[in-house]
Image 1 (cartoon, rainbow, N blue to C red):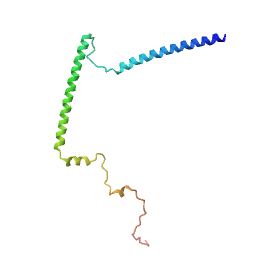
Image 2: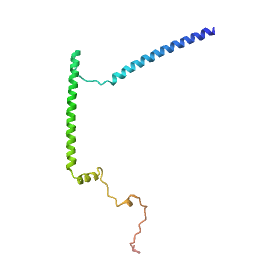
Image 3: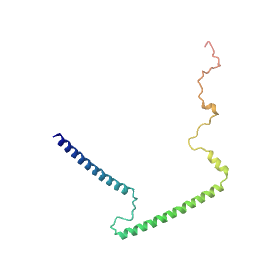
Image 4: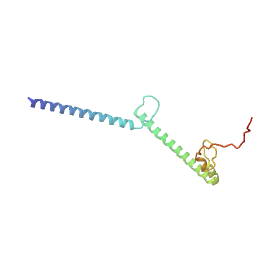
Length: 136
């Protein structure tokens, strides 16, 4: 009687494990599909309209060409800017650069009179040398 109970329990345990294994495998597969979908770059090919496959391929080709033109324009601008900066650096004298480098931005503070001003001084009682007239 105890042997039947143990064998039945073992069978249910194995069946539950198999079901859990299948469920985990299924969820992993769904998760992997979601990852690939999220990682792909979405491109907007046009306005909201029904398109055939040929229209989609044509729109993709136009989109790639447009991106290439924009990248080319960006590269030209960057080269132009670099050339302009190179000429500005070559034409400016070193004294002007040093003068601007020493200036600090921000709130202006009162100038200190050396390193001694940074240390706090102890309070000292002041003695007055004036005479007070007695008898008034």
